[in-house]
Amino acid sequence: MAMITLRGIPASPGVAIGPVWLYQKAQLAAYEEQSRLTVEAERRRFDDAVEQARRQLDMLYDKTVQEAGEAAAQIFDIHKMMMEDLDYLESVEDNITSQLYTAEHAVACTGQEFAEMFAAMEDEVMQARSADVRDITQRLLQVLTGGQSQTLERSSVICAHDLFPSDTMQLERGLIMAFVTELGSHVSHSAILARTMGIPAVVGVSGLTEALSGAAGTIVVDGSRGLVILNADQQTLADYTARREAYLQERMGLDAYRDRPSRTRDGLELEICANIAYVTDADNAAAVNADGVGLMRSEFLYMNADSAPDEETQFAAYRAVLEKLNGKRIVVRTLDIGADKVPSWLPLPPEENPAMGWRAVRMCLDHQDMFRIQLRALLRASYYGRLAIMFPMIGDLNQLRRAKALLEESRRELEKEQVPMAEKIEVGMMVEIPSAAILADQFAPEVDFFSIGTNDLTQYTLAADRLNDKVADLFDSAHPAVLRLIQHTAQAAVAHGIWCGICGESAGNEELLPFYIKAGIGELSVVPGKVLELRRALSNIDSSSLYGSFLSHIQISEPTPRTTHPFAVLCLKKKN
Ligand code: PEP
Ligand code: MG
Image (cartoon, rainbow, N blue to C red; front, side):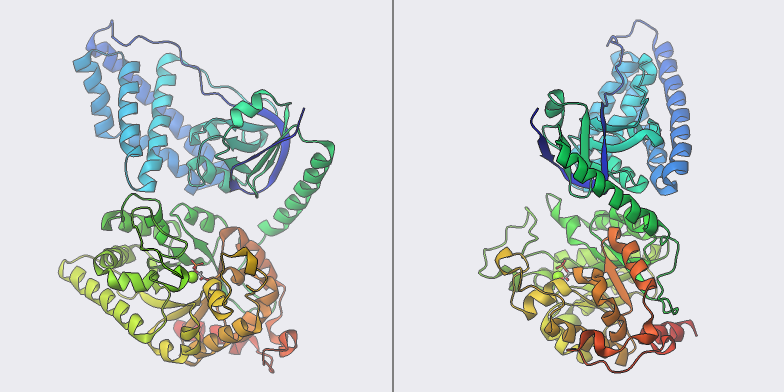
């Protein structure tokens, strides 16, 4: 049989090789639509089913707390709340009372209606609730019809058209090698659960079920690259076996760093934070115990919507992230659309050079109504944790001052409305345009922090389009010119007593770590999957022995003892 490689969305990293187990939802016994019982009897059947489903959800909650932690288990609390939601209950009861439906048909109709309603919502988080409604509806129907779920009897790769969180959690954890689904996105709850439990997963694999029908029993899953291979030949199997071993070795060593501080061998503490795009990514940041979120790319709230998200939607999103990170600092970057990030609802005029065009704060300052909505939402959310606000693509002081003035106006507006807000919110800027790096000493007195965006800083400094693979070899974030700008920016921050971090991709470049430390960088923000690796690399460095020799083109001549590292000095000052 020919080898088949299918591509999907990499939902949870890791490699698995094992037998396919095709998951099918519990077969529901056929049921009648019109009831033959009295309304009271039918309602009692429904009440009993709700009671039983509630007990099942409690059990699933406890099991998930054990296997994936409390954050992951919350979904079953949410299911309970949704099932007990008055609108949902009243709708079912109304179907029983006025339509004389059986409890089964009444639940199915309400489930359908509510799932469609959520699916039609603009907010991505609310859309995802549609799957949750279908999940609780399926549970109630299963209780009412006495349907049985399949049981997993040996270690297998779970393949399914779609998987609900409760499907996932009622399987025996120790027997699940990986998940592969035809539907789903990286924000679907099953994907989140897979990541949280460290099980490799690929979702959104179109053609999966059809391909499985003509394949032999073993499947290879590459959750890191989003690949699924059926009928793998001997060489491919051997390659993936080696890859799996290497991955497991690596993970085992890394897990130990989850609960260790982000500290050099000689005790210098830095912050290793996570970059996130979606609210649910905050779970990944929390799972690796990141020291905070160094960059929330808020534009993703705008990208996956039919129109600009309103104040309430944004407020709920920022608040949710703050609560998930439980007191750690979250740096939310204000809207950075334009260039390669254009929402479908915002038809931008074509530009010759969009990366250098009308984008980010430049656009926000021209679209103040839209910008104010975001600023209000951020200020309101600040009450629920440690929020910092960061402006992207700042190129001159005037832009920074105008953005800050709008923030101040929004604060005064909310004060008048007596809306609670945090008293102190750190306000910072991205340093990603060379002019900002060069004039960092002029910006530093006006902000609480800098975060260097090495992706854009590199493309603008080297005139190498970050999206053009033909100039990819010119795009080098370790280029001396870029490093000098980083050093210059960090020095200006140090001189003005503010902290300076890096949130571009090269924050995760372990080879540059000694240079960053030496330059006075205090925070590095990377994708959640990189946090532990970077923390481990940091722990192997002795900061007091860092001389300039490792990067000769950057003039660093003196060792920095831990106690005089600018970030340590700053932290000490704050403590006292
Ligand atoms: C950067 O430019 O380095 C950065 C972090 O922002 P983005 O990648 O979103 O442009
Ligand atoms: Mg950028």
